[in-house]
Image (cartoon, rainbow, N blue to C red):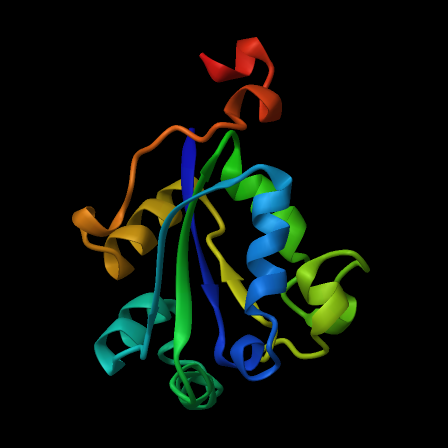
Length: 154
């Protein structure tokens, strides 16, 4: 099973979308293995968005991500990274398909409700960046047999 990270951004919290967002991942059959709310520090912002540090929009991005708390969610599932990226939709909210989180709730490229890991490798780094090992839980969900076929459970 893959693990991946979602960051529910300050705009989602201000717009009372936390429950709706979590519900979509749970309804899909993904397992929440870590969940916490925090204010993102300068150091974590610079680590997480290191690829944008030299871009002209970085300071606006940093201000936006620190405008309020965020919710970090570690999720697990078969091909979880790809499945979650389908649920979240295109980065630019106004271009995202209807039915996706961004397609239903966002118009912006920055105020786009959620961050989703873009690869298994990045997901591992991002989970380690925002969660301590003891904040992640390994447990079996009662619906596991109903979410996956016998071949997929192995």
